[in-house]
Length: 212
Image 1 (cartoon, rainbow, N blue to C red):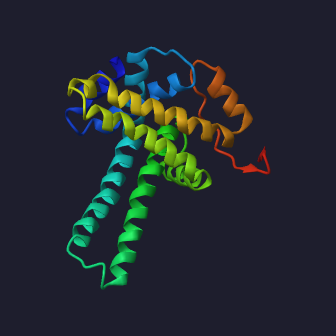
Image 2: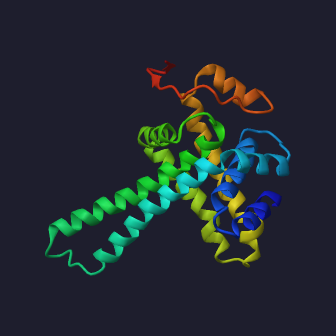
Image 3: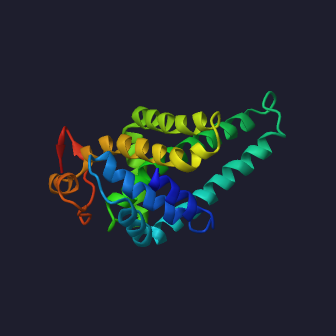
């Protein structure tokens, strides 16, 4: 609840929303891995460290998301019964929208786990994880959307005190089950055992059940 309230307050200026989201994910990532970190220091420490990458990632989301919305407005004026290209274009747009949501699941989780990874590599790794585990990723996205849908039926105060934290925890817990399968053993051990993550080793790909 405290992490959710901190996120809601820090998000009010809008420009600080990406940093607040990074702070929320950092705390919930620790909780999803069975730890009990200090809320305030973990939240604001991560917000301070990750605000640049988080802001760029949010801007990329706005850019791609804006194009998806624009295409949706254009498609609303088109006749799909007589123009097969319009139907194809809409299908591509829907695929891009779904891919954007799924890639964001892993992008924010990786952002707070692997601090030294460049943003470009982070997004590429997130996309690779999505296409390697599509059904699990869609399941995590669906589960993370449920608190938002439920909160629409509850008093508005629920969103301020619980919804964002619950969504972030579901995403962190769900993506961690995938991410840990692709980490080098020494990095996996450091993320599971040390009080603070050691984030200076890259993701590795699984090959026939082993690490490379």
